[in-house]
Amino acid sequence: MIKKDGSKDMFEFDYKQVIAFRSDLKMSKGKIAAQAGHAAVSATEEARKHFKEWWKAWLREGQCKIAVKVESEKELLELEKQSKELAIPCALIIDRGLTEIPPGTITCLGIGPAPAEKIDKITSMLPLL
Image (cartoon, rainbow, N blue to C red):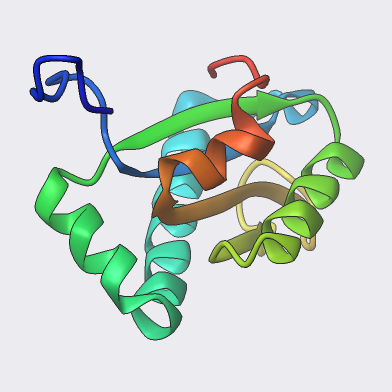
């Protein structure tokens, strides 16, 4: 965002990625970190393939990532639907079930990288993880 004097706030980004996690799963910190990696890489690949200019701008800007939480699988699937409706790259992560949770469990959703204003339309009300 540009200030009145023409400068940009050093803490604001034009592009971002949001990773939304299901809080109902009660995953360990290590499991959350692994799932975050899957979501970040997978959603970034979607952006690189289909939204190259957004991907490049996000890389140049410093790769802003925000982790938020939702309360259920239903809420996560609704976020995925909204992302697709707004043409935002996204990646739904489904666990293989090798450690803490059963196979086929939907754990998180990577949204973006995309313009922050687009992502904020669907995630700005969500609490931080």
